[in-house]
Image (cartoon, rainbow, N blue to C red; front, side):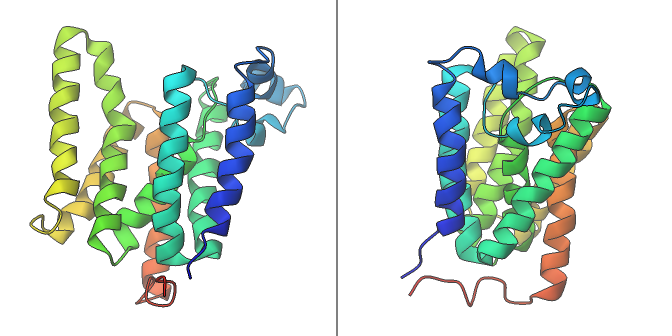
Amino acid sequence: MFKPYATATAFAVTAVPSLLQFALPGLQPALMRDPAAIRGGEWWRLGTALVVQDGGLLGTLFNLAFLAVLGYLAERSFGPARWLALYAAGAVTGEAAGYLLDDQGAGNSIALCGLAAGLALAAEERTARSLGAFYAIVSGVWLLATLGTWGVVAMVAVAAAGFQLVAQRERVPAALFTAVPIAVAAVLVALRDLHGFALVGGMIVAWILRGTSPSTSRSTRPA
């Protein structure tokens, strides 16, 4: 029987400090990505920023929920080693971009972008591919909320369109699952959003996976 050990481990390591930060207000500032502090020698923040969240309680629960769902699908599709490669790809490229762009923050959403890109581009199962593409949309759609009333309307419309990728996945052309993260990444990179760089990192690893394993999920499907 399939057991998602990598997902469970990452979930526990992320959930404990992410929830504990609400009881210990100083925890998140001490662990978050702070380029100035990193340049001063606190290099560990590039890693610890992944286990606390800057999106409040709702954002924390949102990230943890997607870690459970995308993590499970990715580990079932690719196995734990390639799961780690995708998760690390999103984390490393996202954190590097945050440091270079002098962007303070925290959260594991950039690492989730690595998993999402991998699922959308390299998974065989349509459910996995559609959810990966959906998360790529979700990672960028929140930017629309900053545009005021029309931004909220646009956000709802785009989110609804993204939902159709999941609800109508059997009718959606397979190529669209690949096109979505590419388009979202291009827009986010142009806007200097870290999630765009994280998606690019995940896509690079996903293309490598596609090239080295013609049947990525066959050997890891649950019995």
